[in-house]
Image (cartoon, rainbow, N blue to C red; front, side, top):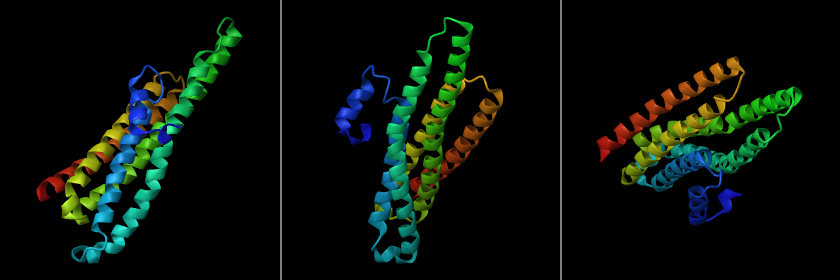
Length: 207
């Protein structure tokens, strides 16, 4: 389990020639880090007299960031697991027409499954960005720069997830699946970009 490794060990493996963790796992981690900064801002805002009016909403945001934290971290390892299925499919023999067909079907299944993890990274990071956008307005001004950093990390996680979806789609024959999935990830990116840019702009105004 990569999430149980030290930061130093994780980065060392990431930098090596090992296929996992790779861009998918790094994107999930970026999302988790960005989301964690949101949690930190919540914790620094709670209990302050100046922010008493928004305390119930801050508590609600904190609960949501805790849930997203667990989900995003779990995807670091899930991304490595689905890669194993893709790698196994690529190694299947293709000496006969029957073997070629079986390999093609197995590869398409594995690649479709492999799309699901980066899509989740995108979805969870988008949810975290919605919270970050609100924190840019109501979070403690003492930690407002952290909201901006969080938004940037989450935006990177969304786009990192998209790249991992696209590389998997490039090997899938199901045109309808490819088209629908491509449109879906583009919609997520568009919304994420808007939220991240708005949050960053709001933060910049307060610095």
